[in-house]
Amino acid sequence: MNLVFIVLLVLQIAIFLMTLYAFVHAAIQRPDAYTAADKMTKPVWLTILGVATVLTLLLPAQSVLGMIIGACAAGVYLVDVRPKLLEIQGKSR
Image 1 (cartoon, rainbow, N blue to C red):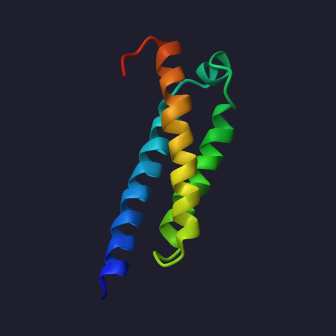
Image 2 (cartoon, one colour):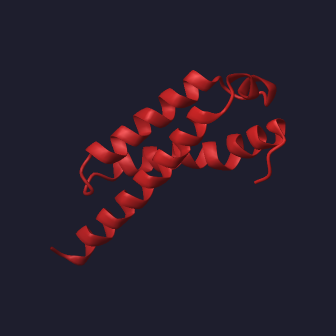
Image 3 (cartoon, one colour):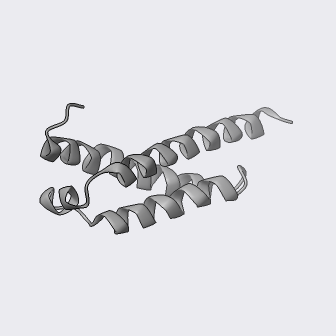
């Protein structure tokens, strides 16, 4: 195994864990919090994050497409949606 493969594999695992965390977090939030925060609905976010998690896991590490999709989907959720949901629900970050 060469260094590039190892780096891509570690990156794929990290992005998979990030998308999985975002999916679980989205799943345990109240559905009405999404509409109160003026964001897409809970089923839409669960679909986006679920597809991103599966693509990150199933596409090989050499194919960076799955990692890009997963990182973008989880990044938008964690940076934009998650703080608003926590603010609406009165939870600390």
